[in-house]
Image (tube, rainbow, N blue to C red; front, side):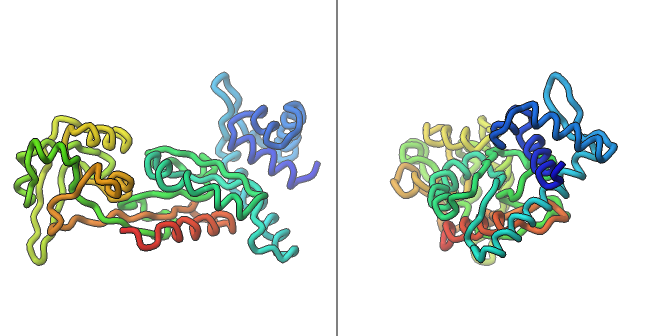
Length: 295
């Protein structure tokens, strides 16, 4: 049994969640995948996968093996590229995690150019507003926004963006424009829990004021926030990234521009304890280039 092939097969099974999906990715039959995993477990004398009606779940030993096997495959790929002298010749699979709205608006439309640069590279883009477990999900790099609550993460700040108070011209025509934090209490706000909640600190020179937004509508996803604001249901506090097309077109407008809010930071987060692969580093550099100058 080829050890590297067995490692690659196991990694694909964990990443896809099934023997059949791994077989399709490897372009081989499902029995061959099942046989390879069985031989691997026999050679290691340990159960790597738990099989149930709900699918396949790595055991504790399986997760540990997955992490190291994935790293070994990446290092082998990088060794091949170094030997060929093809610094830009990235290949294999790159698994990326990003928030749904940010990924849809700012990453997906620009992926084509990155893939064109690396024709041997495949990307699995997992769009999820949750901060998923990078090791369990086999993620190479995650794009996360806001404060990082886990100090153990391996992270690199790659961009920042202004947060603003905004709404549609129709909403402000009907309800007036607030000119200070205290005036926000007279408005209906659409509140996004993951975007900072209802309590905000504003700054204007040496003046700092904290306010709690009033709103009858709270949403758990940025897509809901966007739809509610664009339907004139209230103003909101959000990053300029979230409403970039509408800010450019005039479909929404900012108010209280002499007051500032804490910036929204964008981080590249890597699995703890693992060196970032060349593929992950190249992708992060690409995203950083896309967002250069955007605040």
